[in-house]
Amino acid sequence: MRLLPIIVMMAAGIFISVQGPVNLRLRQATESPVFSAAISFFSGALILLTIAAAGGFGGFGAGFRGLSTAPWWAYLGGALGITFVLGAILCIPIAGTVVVICSGILGQMLGSMLVDSFGWFGVQRIAPTPMRVLGVIFVFVGVLLVQKK
Image (tube, rainbow, N blue to C red; front, side, top):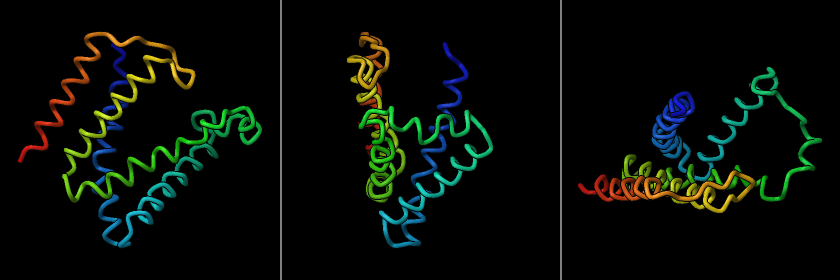
């Protein structure tokens, strides 16, 4: 088992579960789900730029020169992230935090299994195994259970 990455991503998962309600509160203050999502991304961008300027995690690396070597789809990360942030802002008041986060995790697992299975976006191809499929099924059952009131 790769313990450190698991611990890091568990912490990130905790932060994501708190991010939704925090962004929801910002939405209430701004009265706009889109503007509150934009503020969320802006504050994150400022932190990332500060870390890069300090040389953390490789700083700016190849910088703007390196951008010309990236395929067109490599620029979609922020756009893809919008769906989670804006979706959580809109759905938490309706479904609750645990349902939104569990549904998001299910979607991440399904999408990740497709990416691994086909080796999309340059990742190593990892065929689905019965245990991986069972894990996704368990998360699906979890979504069904947590949405019950």
